[in-house]
Length: 246
Length: 243
Ligand SMILES: Nc1ncnc2c1ncn2[C@@H]1O[C@H](COP(=O)(O)OP(=O)(O)O)[C@@H](O)[C@H]1O
Ligand SMILES: [Mg+2]
Image (cartoon, chains in turn blue, red):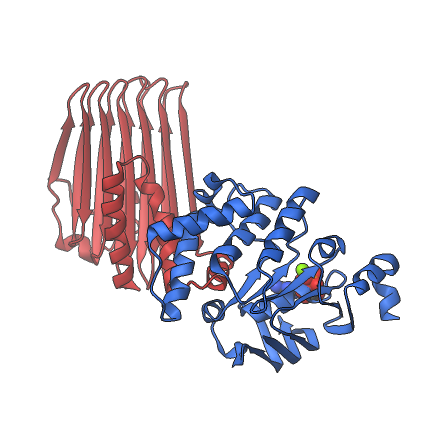
């Protein structure tokens, strides 16, 4: 599904990713944990193709294609989804318009017919209900006036409507109370299937109690320094990152 | 007819394209009278070069809603001289779109000459290329204009480096019990929002158009759905042609 090989990247001329190698197979959920400033969000932005995050070496292959050769919107259409650590507000553009525009833009790029207004509303309603986001909020401007938790739920609503092959979720669990965390975890689990995969970026082992990962990786200073099974998250929680690095 | 050809020293013309002004001078003042107690709504679509000067009188207890869509002309100026009588209500929503080397200006003077009149002006401008969009908004409250409630809001979106926007709010208040609010902001399309849209699959040009349209839509607030839909479609077409 996703093969990252010896990836290096810099921001403002400063090297952040320093040779990162990681393979996630279809059907798997991996978690990346690591201290603040390790480069977790940078990795997610590099995968999504954000301006200013410059790849200086290595490669990323997504479903057999060179991911880095594609523009950001083409990566989305190819089935990559990024749940942002800090979802962006878009004044004056409603969630529904945003999401419908996105879905149809992706479908157009893939050569599929657009969905009708009625079909779209059905998808949006179902997704909002699954993620416990009141449907009225779908009519409001994207993320404007949303609490931290509502923004994260909204990211998940988008993921459910867009149905990506691969989701990178950057600290989707932070800012959530325990009930919301369970709802979001259920939402992630609902998309687990042999054709899908996900990379969960998190600080806490909490989310991983509900979405049990196949692999856990520790990212420090731009590199994966250790990988293991789900139990590694518990070791980290007990011993901290410094013990791992030593 | 208005007076002599303006010069750069005239405050109201400081951002103008004076060569173009000379071609359209003199300007015939067009009167608009809204009789006391009546309600009137107009939409002005300005797409051909020229200057218009409307002298608008809104009678006691009357209301006037004016929507302006000024786009697609190389030089354009609309001047409004509005007089609000007792309890009158004036609502302006203006969309200015400048591309290429266009100069688009809106100059308003709203005079509150009697008590309890309200005015609300929302002006949204988009400038691309080396275009200049300007809003000169004067509010004059006479001694008799107690309980005036006047507001003006100007926001401009610059689509690239060479584009410009000017805002010149001017309040002249001689009554003591009034509310006058004004705000002006000039900015660019939010790059974080562009990335967010791209990360969801929306191509850059489409994302820009969507955000620009949303930005302009403030000026259409309060119109009926059919008018909003029609104007929105016109604006989309204009932005698409310019892109
Ligand atoms: N836009 C940016 N401009 C400058 N430095 C940045 C930017 N984004 C990230 N960095 C730097 O890159 C490093 C990694 O940051 P980040 O990827 O956000 O870490 P994490 O998500 O693991 O906390 C940090 O040192 C941070 O200061
Ligand atoms: Mg981060």
